Length: 354
Ligand SMILES: Cc1cc2nc3c(=O)[nH]c(=O)nc-3n(C[C@H](O)[C@H](O)[C@H](O)COP(=O)(O)O)c2cc1C
Image 1 (spheres, rainbow, N blue to C red):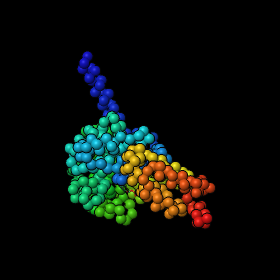
Image 2: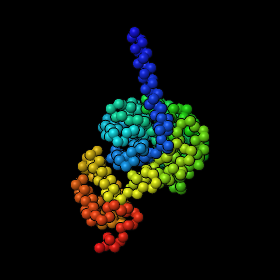
Image 3: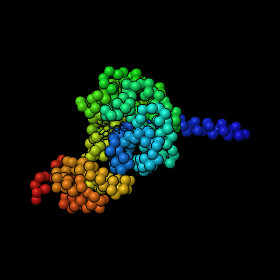
Image 4: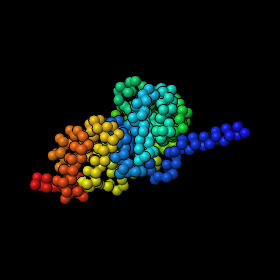
């Protein structure tokens, strides 16, 4: 009898595990294309993701990258960066490191029901010299064997789907198709390709030609990334691929993820700024939250003709109340323009001077 229960339990567990591993396959069936917020260190924290998903609830968010050993050795780090709100679900966490065992150990921390994480993404993207020299990030493009063993070990250690974000090549001399098939056979369930080599870092333009070709050789979803400005641009560039990922295009503009070049009014912009500021303070506390919101606030108002007058105060804001009062002031000073679109320059220079 005991054996029968054990058999049923194991069969159920296997079913649940398979269901979780199939996550991306199921999303493909539900969506025309998968649209991602790119992982961005110093940006993609909980507050940023909430600010994006508030406007574009259908996107998938990948966290900033965290080191696998950081998560293993620091409970404080895990408890600070893994918890998130319902609006950010399904959240994928990105990690980097160089040895498979550490990835497997990190998976045990991340794959805890209390954090409700839905996927683990491996950073094989980062081109920073320090990162490459120490065998992490994009250096895995030239260490195929380690890359394989990392995906395999991580995949075995977790019920969650394992994905990889990488570049089209390290220095232009690698075989992307061979590398990607290698990762697929190790258990990678979604692959994002940035259209520059590691050597190019951010120079030149992203070129997705190799990524389009790659799609013909893989069964798993393939996502393109690099220089995609917004949803419409993404839909033009995605072609037969399964989705696209937007990074810098979202900096001042959660509306980048909406169809038909949606442009927010001044009132919507101010609301978004206030929401983002509040979430940063809620998630990181008054001191850190108010320091970090500064760079975002000016970016939101980048194309607003009146930003100059407020810039100095926005970049030195010290409390949420302070931020709120500057925003209220803009609302009052520009009350007749609240429903206008700032970057269309509907607010004329004369309006600012009068
Ligand atoms: C500030 C910043 C931080 C980034 N941090 C990460 C990171 O943690 N992990 C990662 O895989 N890529 C990171 N990236 C790269 C982006 O995910 C993305 O691949 C790159 O910006 C190209 O996309 P875009 O042209 O849409 O910005 C970062 C990019 C920026 C601008």
